[in-house]
Length: 92
Image (cartoon, rainbow, N blue to C red; front, side, top):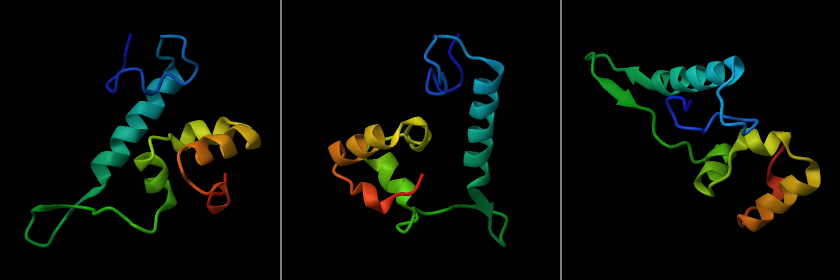
């Protein structure tokens, strides 16, 4: 059974959502919801794109930072290079 975000959080790719995978999905949703902050006039202001965050570059290149963390160094370097990014700019 797919979760709220389809199979995006099915980390072991077995087609089923384990308890831990569901927890990661809910934690992600909570993080996204917290990215909106209330302003003084009680309206919501969405946090803008942080140009200094290297993780934004990874996601813009179509890479998942969590998947990269689980790769060995050679696989990670190759994935970053294939995406046109400098592997030396990232620490995992």
